[in-house]
Length: 461
Image 1: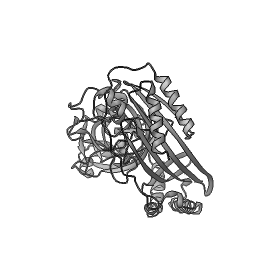
Image 2: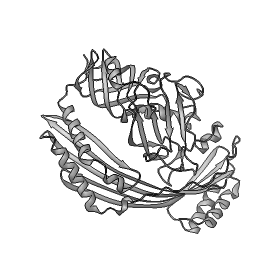
Image 3: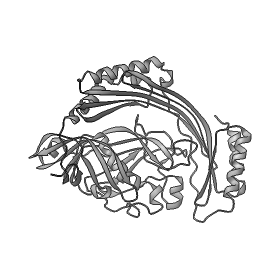
Image 4: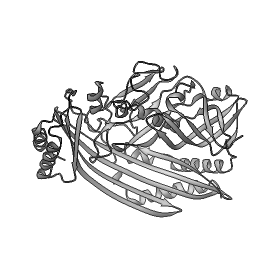
């Protein structure tokens, strides 16, 4: 993408006005998306993004600039502009970080871009047919396919010179069931990081049926009652609560500003003893896995909480300078237009030893939130409100029937202290996470967990 001689010249120019550190992030990204609604192809888009971002450190202050023109003149002009903007702003407190060795480039056997449009159409038709076969209550089916192929390069004044190729391929099925005026949806996702060979083997018809069956089950269910009660949160996407309500507060993006409920608590009990949580950038085939982060550092498996004790934060380069903590390969960004910051990768609560059936049997009255949906979170406090897409009442230790319209309302750091049982059924799910450095691919996950008490939003008893 850019030769070493040009990179060195740009870095030298960027350092010419007294910066402590300079970094170039370049990317060459191709994207595709296709949607299919009510048996009709609705949209097919292709995109190509090429550019570079330049970051300078003056102590613990950073200057960032970017360009879509990768010519020599443009990049040297960018270096001049960034250096001039930062000149005279040096602040005390910075420290040098160690030189890095290059990371291996990730290979994909059959790239997503090699598929023809008719293959995506066949995928959509198969999913649509399987979902509608569930029954006449299915009023609408939407199928989408998207892929991204990205080549990134990172070079910095500390000797870093590395890069990686990344591939993402996703299919999603959403079914809407209708009965009278009521509407409920079910959604399932298929994804692959290793290209078309793996994706073609995924069970699209089964996943489409599951999405439709969920929609039908929920449209026929009564409304959930409201109140405080024990709640069992299901595995898989149930991990979104920890991700949103606790994960962002464990990033040095917020910790360094003391805008986190976990700031200053390393080595202290912050969760129930049965809770261990990790952020693993190395897990094979996961949506948030990369060989290097977007600062060129090798990714790693970071234990955040171990048996209730806070062990680490997610630390990027600037976060390391501000806090004195060791970087964890967590610097991420959407693309070259964004400066990186500390972000989650594959974040999950580790498996325990309890069985889901034992959790249910131990609950006299409560809610089993089998499938979580979206919600809202205050990242500074951890206060959250999440929808329950698939829920069941528990009565006298048994599931008593599906309910809809439930939501979970609480405070993340408080909820993880109230976990009483952790399941042996860990599952992970594909997602996307937004923050000040844009949207990045992530994975959320957990086993089933039982929480002693959470406020459930629904209809008053």
